[in-house]
Image 1 (cartoon, rainbow, N blue to C red):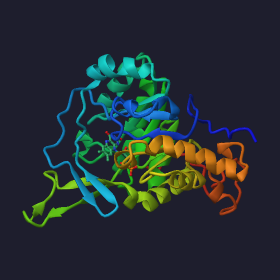
Image 2 (image 1 turned 180 degrees about the horizontal axis):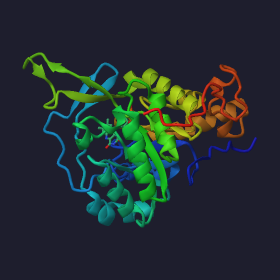
Image 3 (image 1 turned 30 degrees about the vertical axis):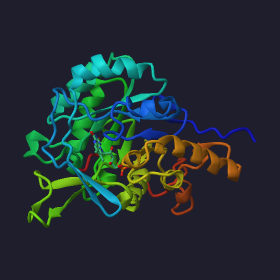
Image 4 (image 1 turned 45 degrees about the vertical axis):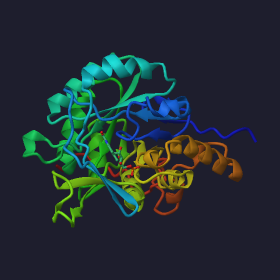
Length: 329
Ligand SMILES: Cc1cc2nc3c(=O)[nH]c(=O)nc-3n(C[C@H](O)[C@H](O)[C@H](O)COP(=O)(O)O)c2cc1C
């Protein structure tokens, strides 16, 4: 059999395989590019960019937990201008679609980021990180309310013609509602999920470990939770879902694909093994080859097939795609 075809499309991006490096765990690809050829990946997602440079939170910023990692990095980044002048030109020649993750405290900031990235060479897509605090909503993250997810998505949609991905937070009552909000706002895809809010207490100091008390939990500890979120999101929308959360091996990635993710991203796994991403690509290829499956796309959502009534619309998650004539928020 010819080598399996691992290609997938997300919006206008044709990826040679479904494996991305997740935002904030791969920098701008500079260091990882010294370890392997990053063009073997399906896509690279940059560290979250804000309009102005940010110094991030005071230390400690990382704390290991059983099977997980708590982080409170606080969006440290060089800012939009430095990204455009120093990182984008190199990434444009890297031979891999580059997805720029953006963060803002207001809808206007998200829109300005997206419109100023519109003509930057090599930027294939915008990933909107809605987990940031919305300063017009008493500091609650945009992601915590589907109405805010819709507003920011619809506004950014008007600001860019590039492929738009909205990155959902699991810290919400119903992630399917958030996914539907992003889809109705015009997003081309949703990524699921960002980190889960957690905390740790330093028993020696008898104080919370982190200055901001709460931090984001990632790594293998969240994988079953993220998988459930992906299943729910894939059930609710027609746009592709990018599965993220505790993926560090091909077997992990395949679970997400079978549950309905069209692509996956490796995050904390990059810290454990810097070559995790290319290993996941190779492992997915072997899995397909061993089973005589020619196209990766035949795997997507297969675990859901037959689990629910067939809606006859090509979505194996039969209980999804409900008609939603009006916004419920
Ligand atoms: C140190 C660190 C920094 C992160 N920075 C960002 C970021 O800037 N923007 C974003 O959308 N997600 C960010 N994330 C979230 C990851 O992209 C990913 O969604 C999350 O960690 C879950 O995946 P994982 O368990 O594979 O790490 C960050 C995660 C970590 C661990």
